Amino acid sequence: MKQIEVSTPSRICFFGEHQDYLGLEVITQAISIRFYAEFKERKDNVVTVKIGSRKFNEDTGEVYNWVNHYINLKEDIVYENNRDYIKSIINTLRKSGYSLNQGFDIKMVSDIPVGKGMCSSSTMIIAIIKAILEGIESQDKDNKEKIAYLGYIAEVEEFNEPGGMMDHYASALGGILNLKFSDKHPQINEIDFEIPGKFILFDSLRDKDTTKVLASAKTPIVEAIKELENKGVRSFKDLIYREDRDYLIGLLSEEKRKKVIANIRNYYILKQGKNLLSKDRFLPEVFGNLLKAHHENLRDALNISTKEIEQILSVAYENGALGGKINGSGGGGCCFVYAKEEDCQRILKAVEDLGYVGKILNPDSDGLRVEK
Image (cartoon, rainbow, N blue to C red):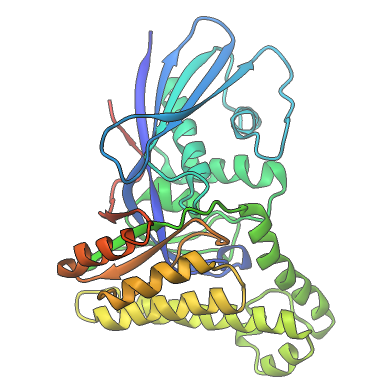
């Protein structure tokens, strides 16, 4: 019986949260906490998927919270909810021309915090698609960009969700990426630079509602562009580059104006951050300050921070962190800080004394890979 194990990493987003679905840019880095998927061939038409998770600050290997899924490939696949991702993966692969007529078992284990802004759902989907394509020996099994796009369709387009495709490409490709989303498929720029220092991930212990947060951040911007169509505005980029930008923004309600301005500011912060990411130009303190500024715009205009995250960041700064921000769509979940390596243990202990667990991260350059 054919058996194979694959995995894919989580990511942190340096710059560009809530920018990808506006057709702008993001800069992400894959990190070495992963979602694993083990594929075993069956001789019937049944698909089973068993999913469990580990606590990300523990090294015991114990797996918690097992969830089981069952699909009969001979029956119509009907979604039971808007996050019915196992079924949407099968439907997406079939619609894309892949033959799935024989059953299989997939056992999954996540080291990635679930429901915390660490793209656990996207990495789960990417890992399953990779495992299936390996299992059926598809010619696309090593095509990371194709797998990323299939993952986006299965998670976002299949359910008409408000999210973007940052997580799918960041996970599948690995490394530090500058992704530009002006077209159907992103323009991918791999940044060959190892950032000195370390990143520390903290769990705020508050779950988040990703779709609700995305909708509250995205909908006002979409409505703002719609309101300005009669002025020739066709995309968010018009609100960045047009000479009459200030006049156009002034036509909006105060709430929409605030969100538009914050997104414009974060776009220019991203440009500054991208310019820093090279051996000759990198300045740790400047990089940290840009992370802080990005977070402040997300907090004050998009309202996606929480009192727990603000407490974590404040204590981390008091103990030497150079910068930090919320990670993911917001409204809870995880945040991270950037620090010199010699300060990490002090920061980690100070925040953990507040009751929030943390983990020092390592970069991941592999993206999707076969484990065995």
